[in-house]
Image (cartoon, rainbow, N blue to C red; front, side, top):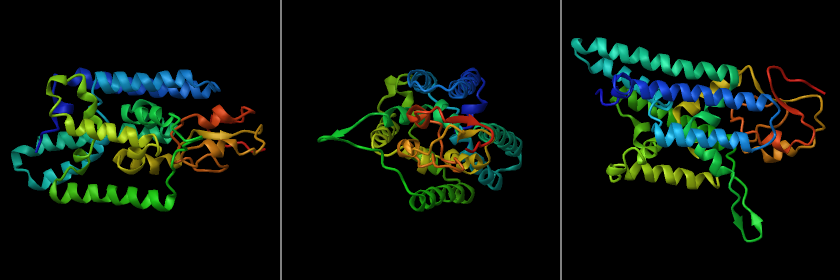
Amino acid sequence: MFSQINIFLNPHLTPTVLILFLSYTLISLGAIFLIRKRMTKKTPLYILLIISVIFCGLILGGSAHPALPSQLFWNSLFNFSRAVLSEYDQILSFFYLMLLILGLFILSTFFVGRTFCGYACPLGAAQELVSRLNVKTGKKTARLVNFSDKVLIPLRLIFFISMIILAISWGVNLYNQINPLPGFNVIRNYLNIINLFFPLSLLLGTLILSIFIYRPFCRLICPFGTISWITSHFSLYKMNRNDKCTDCGKCEIVCPTSEAYRDSNKSECYLCNRCKEICPFDAIELTRKKTRR
């Protein structure tokens, strides 16, 4: 019942968890700083993405990821219904801890949208880096496949609702069965590579798919991705056009989530910076209010 609680409550893992959360915060703040400073060069943001993959992913293993507490939060509700009296204090402490961790990550999306998903999450960063690869087929360069809302929203909600129902009703951790993040432990646990075969295969499969489809795991499977998709509707700071915009449409062409059009709610914006990089007039900024021509 408590097999995953030690990820957060084990005193031997506390320094790692604290370092991981601090790293998430610093990388997210770094991304915000670079984007706010009208950064149009790719190199600094690439460096942040690589740091996230190497440090938060390969070195620390990405264990304290917000997708985990979002799943375990629902599982703890199932544990309440099955626990004996002596276990209630432990479950209640775990429940509050999951609520606190998940709440902090959600709170960040109300301020700066999906900055964490865009740069601090090692799996998100890895998918972002891979999505920048140019795959040539014949004489043409393949473009990223983008899901339409008619496909994306139903699939995302079906998985998310199924995850909640299975967790509350039967204690099934659906997310944990298809979670690629443990694949990052390949360096830390190279002696147990056989036990990591399945998550490592999931990780590699996700990255290969990311060459053709933009952030498939973030947009279809990740439970925190679904939660932040909802909360990012109300984010204070978003990528918006200023009065220099000439409506040339270049930003809309390169946006991998079709969120660059004027007056978009930016709920699917991962602040990838492609729109700023392509804009010839420096007309896109991370601002609190939208400015019109």
